[in-house]
Image (tube, rainbow, N blue to C red; front, side):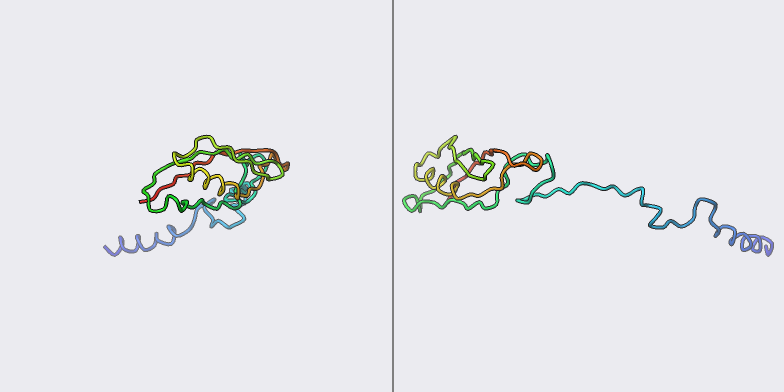
Length: 139
């Protein structure tokens, strides 16, 4: 029994030694594993070259329910195309108006106040466009 215990205790230090190639790793050992990814910015900040697919909104004030329709239950949509020039000038084109003319007018007035960073092709501003839907909903 004493032999078995001495044999077991005697072999423990051997188990604690690392074998060749199992040395502790250091930060410098992982430099080749680091991936450098390009920066990507969203929500109104410029994107990297060739990643921006449309104009980037800077300010998007929402329309109000016109006073003539206050108190009414409204569930209506409008769809508009925003043409943004390379100089960041905005033209609003209504694709689908609301059922209520007053809502369409309120939507046009709000969309005319929107501002954008122009669409970029690499480092060059270009004309761009985007389509928006505005949902008017009251209870």
